[in-house]
Image 1 (tube, rainbow, N blue to C red):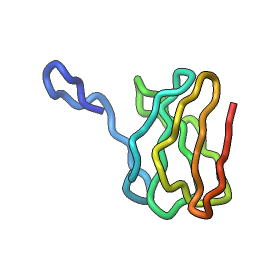
Image 2: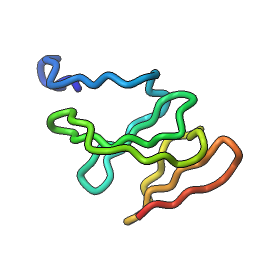
Image 3: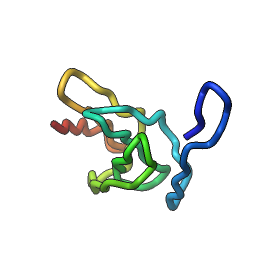
Length: 84
């Protein structure tokens, strides 16, 4: 994470693969995924601490979508996953 005002790095996070979609802020946590990995990662947006991960059972192929109180993911096989 880089502070917009002056470009100073706030924190960094290392995962097994490159982040391939746009992370989304949902219910106070930053959600992101990496290429070829079925896990959705939850990160503290202030500290970069990995808060948890969820194995979705399928590779995530598009940016997570926030719709009200729901987080929607699209899997590689075309499945739609809804999390509350």
